[in-house]
Amino acid sequence: MEATWKKLFWFTFALFLISNAYWLYSTFDNAISHAYYASECEACKKDVVNLQKIFQPNSTKEETINFLKAKNIEYETVEKGMENILVFKSFELVFNQNGQLKDNKNQNKNQKTKQ
Image 1 (cartoon, rainbow, N blue to C red):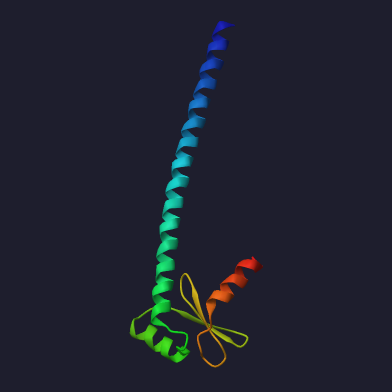
Image 2: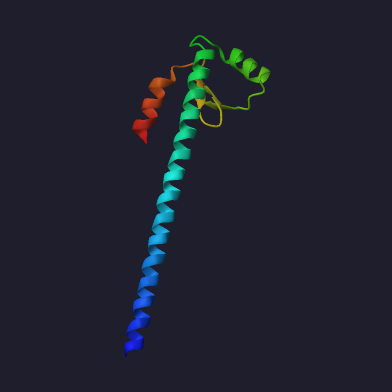
């Protein structure tokens, strides 16, 4: 009877240690992942701000494409209704039917409310 009690105690104690070790690992992993994600978001935001400084609201689609080709920046072109969209890895530039860069601030707000 005493041997069974000791075995159960050590089994429960080992299970407790394993679960706490897993919890500790999970907590550190989440913290590191969050820090990495936050730094990546900041880098993307800085890229967008720098790109907005380069492309003024009166930039045309042709001027933008010529600039991107000259700098060897990868992009993808999508047509959606009357809009032409240049899609990059983390963001997009939207041009109206006249080839003028649209104000994306209002569009981003609309996308957040739709989600």
